[in-house]
Image (tube, rainbow, N blue to C red; front, side, top):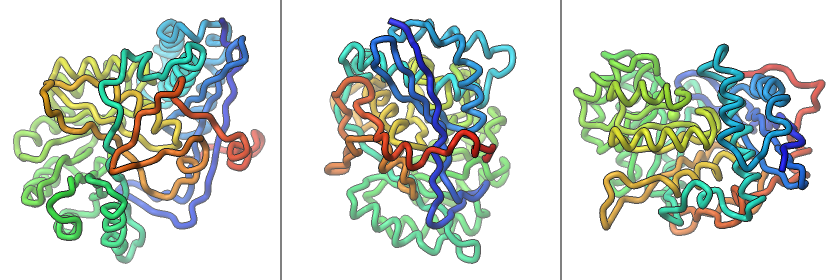
Length: 384
Ligand SMILES: [Mg+2]
């Protein structure tokens, strides 16, 4: 069995209404996905997280060394790609290119062996995962949180038990928004905040102290991801759990976060951190520090399915008879690629999503939708 074809697709969807967070504004979704085909004709799909055209260039670079390798030997393929890029990119988009190919190979391997990816990872400890709603982005520069109440009420009525909101507008405005949000959703909903590294240490401490009374489940990326020691110091100054890691790469990067005791929860993005092969190692490493793993997800339904299989396989540490539900990030902002690209559709029932027990990731790409959103190769230009 050999890998005989690797194809990339850049998919773009222009949003009906742009939204923003502490760093920049989104007016479109632009994502690179990859299809890896084996000599028996079976294929798998993968996705990378990061600038789509750069990701695609990375996959093109890796293509010649991956073609001809055995898709059943995913660790051998991974290590071949890692060695090829180590001298130039120990972090960043080239690692995301590796991730996209690696995910496609896991999907392909599962399809060849007729087993779900969770089984290949070692088995599913749970067959349902609890999604938390990621939303509450800012929609108007005059009144950024004007749609928050309505949006949060919608999530509660849909059955979400946990919601993550954006902060990062400034301490007083964030405080007002978080206070209001706790009133709107009531006491029974888990509420998390994410500043996308908007604050310096002094500001992050101030905001954390001010929002402590609102029972916040975690404060995500309070600080720049480079400041491992400041993250650690912040943890000693607040009772709110601190999370981070969506900008981190490979087990070596996560080891920095872990050994500096920077976070209570690590959030690797499987489509960026080195793929499923590396995410599995990062998950194991986290257990040696007693740190929780709740992956970052953003993008198409391919990325969400990878996370479902990964989370199903995560070991509860510590184990006990009544473990809390494991969480998966479920972005709720406008995204046709998440809604339409793959089938069967993601279904939330009684506030939970089932882990697919079909072969591979348990999905296939709708080729008609793929053609609708794919940008012709000669029209591709770099966008962030
Ligand atoms: Mg985040």
